[in-house]
Image 1 (cartoon, helix red, strand yellow):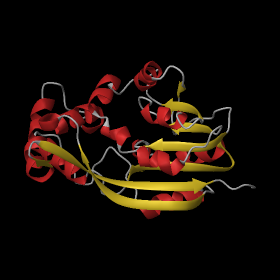
Image 2 (tube, helix red, strand yellow; image 1 turned 180 degrees about the horizontal axis):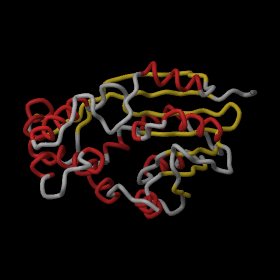
Image 3 (cartoon, rainbow, N blue to C red; image 1 turned 90 degrees about the vertical axis):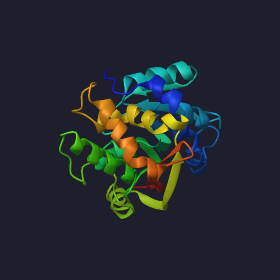
Length: 256
């Protein structure tokens, strides 16, 4: 079982991740008795919000620490460790839900195929994730800071998958979904932690952003990122991340 996330720090410093995603749960509109898969459940807070609507929910995450934290947070809900790009569950679902996860999985076509297979006829795929332009200011500052410290990065470097809206909707249609709703929107996101907000954000995602930077050099790189971004993303000691999101509802055909 692999662990790449600090689940305790994620829970302690990043509540905005699930608090701002309550609208995606509303878009899902879970009904009593429905069987729903939460793909990339994190520490389980949105899984629990869906379960509170009297739906039966299975939380799924690729990270062992996240799954363990979810089980501790919500022992009455079932959670399993599976890879979003390569899973085949025995049960079929009325809906698959996902929030702030799909941009971590570059094998997007595999995800769409897996989700389609996991749905009952007429089932829906409801999700939100980062789209083109998401955290662009933060990423540009990281590139500058890393280049200044001797690690070469180009402006188009990214550890994430941020497709355009058109690219992703075409991918869903190629997977045989019918897209019923899609919205791209800017969502400047206040970071928890006050003056430490950006540092907390960098630390929880540092394993993806700074893969070569050792523990000794990382604080200096992070301080440079803070210096570069302070005039842009910090006001009155509060940091804001420049999020851009894609939210959609896609449906599997009743008959194939």
